[in-house]
Length: 118
Image (cartoon, rainbow, N blue to C red):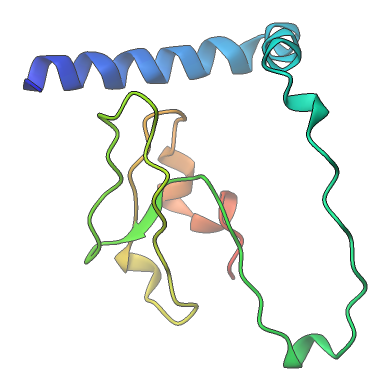
């Protein structure tokens, strides 16, 4: 894919994301049409041991990855569903954002805006 096409796709993705987030009614209509509201509710299970003994994982679709990891492939029309692991002790300066569907300037200043790990 040429550089111009990648730039256009990134521009289009960012503007479509803004278009939906600026109009909550439009977003609700899209959710209804996509039938996203019919997903089953997640199971809520009480914790059976102290939190300090639990293994916790945070999952986000924010596009975060370590600088040593390959960035997410934003050129794929269907998105990049792959995972990246970020250890809790990783230096915050080594965590990058590769995502076209939201303005991540605030997340680049403070990762906790999108991924609350501190």
